[in-house]
Image (cartoon, rainbow over all chains, first blue to last red):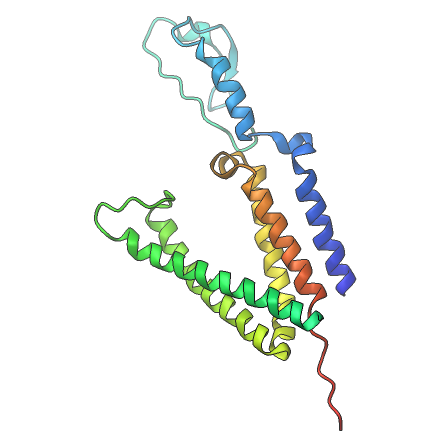
Length: 81
Length: 135
């Protein structure tokens, strides 16, 4: 029992140590956010680039369709980002 | 030697838990003052649960202090303490994995998880042996 507990606790300790080296564990870290925010800074004031996306109901949409009227874009993190 | 090490680990952990628990308990009342600015933006619900966690920590820490004084008590407390410490480490690791908590606390979460896991291993290996009764 003691060795089983040691094995489990030791495995968690190793996982904790190597967590930053696991590619999937790097998502959403502060480092990632900091790397992206300065890159977006020069986008302020520019024309909205053309891109396609799905609306909340899953219907295909395009930024071209949004031209000609006031528009509020909200970017939000989804659960599976 | 082993008993002394267990007393030291249980006593130190218990003392820190009691102190931390009292701090969390006091934080709830400090938050109720008009215009208070808590160091952590937990909000009313967060402070409510912090006070609950504080009371539980005082109880847990008190049990560990009792275990440091009496090894038979310590033997009973050690396994669940190790399990709870592993739980503390596990949710910190998941917290690090999620960006929200990492943005607030950075790698401190992983460091805390490592400390709790090492403590859990100490409770597993330093657990006092059962008392021998001479009949």
